[in-house]
Length: 390
Ligand SMILES: Cc1cc2nc3c(=O)[nH]c(=O)nc-3n(C[C@H](O)[C@H](O)[C@H](O)COP(=O)(O)O)c2cc1C
Image 1: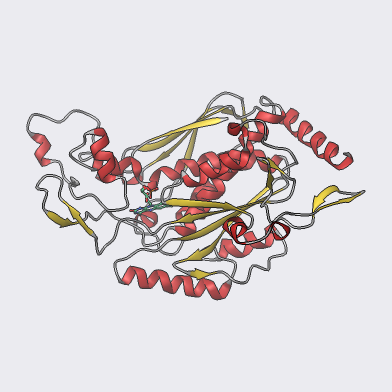
Image 2: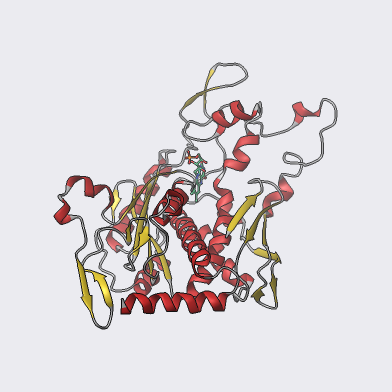
């Protein structure tokens, strides 16, 4: 399974084409719209999220509520496009009209793609860069992830994401007894945090950042339960599923780090406190006593929950901008301001769920049958039985 995305932040629409999704998967727009709405929520988001309600159109690959095995085209229109038709028009400009184009960007934002992108592609108006480097693109990544989640749900695999940290405020109470409980609580939380005390402090930290024209980042975690043993492989570097998930997390805008299980803490502990002891019972077969590895050994799933965390840096657009340089005059100037969030960590946790779900679904589809959902489901069940009886 693979997908491409296309579309500018203030262009007419965002598009994704998903190739290799198996036939026979129940799929309706609502499965995707629920996820799009989750991405748009969250304390600390800017005004754009309030004025636009994203809705998907499924344009190919689905008939009468089931996938056909052919490419699936998903489109999300930008409702704001009507205000940007001149600025973002597709047609060539008339002679001399270039000077009149509004919202030209000539003062690159530190931390954003503006300057490198402009030099790389030779753009004098850095809007040509920011329109595509904007995290608006994650809308259709969430749409693709919603389809992946549908595949996983058919196989009894659950995915949940939540926020562990914002602006230095850490969630301490993580005593959820099931993924369902985690989901129920975080779905009601404006910052997608399980810990109610931390939630309040996180919101205060966001208010404070906003008041100061600043931005803050944080840490999100995704947990996936029910993935059978042995998905991914140790035999070749590009078949290691943990590596693919790590790349997917760091590919999310503003994500700078990733860890599995106890993660970077493993550097500070002896092996006896890092590795998970192996146990066996007649009912369940092999298991690990603990899950410090976060569900991976040798690039393959262990059958324990996959636990992956990503670090998001603070958003680069600041209402009190850092110093930059105007690329035309070469004079020092405050960086440009583009309508922006002060904290997008809660929304980013939804994006993280989506990209992790995609990688796991793609690996399962590749390994267990590819073309038909019913065959894949049978093969996954067989693998679960082999593992129990091994
Ligand atoms: C959900 C989400 C929303 C974001 N919103 C903004 C935003 O409003 N303003 C901004 O400058 N950056 C925002 N970002 C981050 C930038 O897109 C990102 O920092 C930029 O593309 C540069 O890439 P890099 O930080 O990965 O190096 C957001 C990221 C995510 C995941």
